[in-house]
Image (cartoon, rainbow, N blue to C red; front, side, top):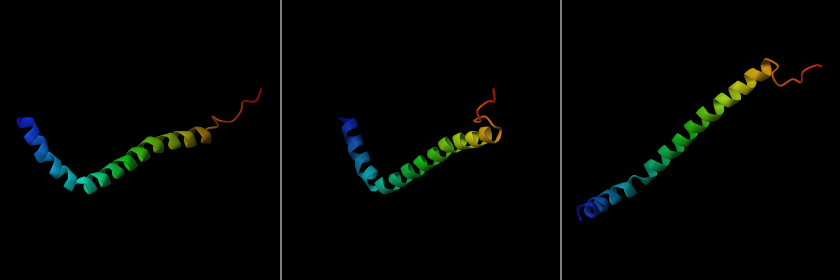
Length: 58
């Protein structure tokens, strides 16, 4: 019984904060995208500059 009362109190607060949560979720997705894709692009550029993707001469 107490859990149901507490959950009812939490729900109105969470509905008021939904726009803020949406902004934080979008910024979190952006940061994860930058830090996830950024190093991959950096490693690719580094390997390309070192000639890693050139076909070997036989």
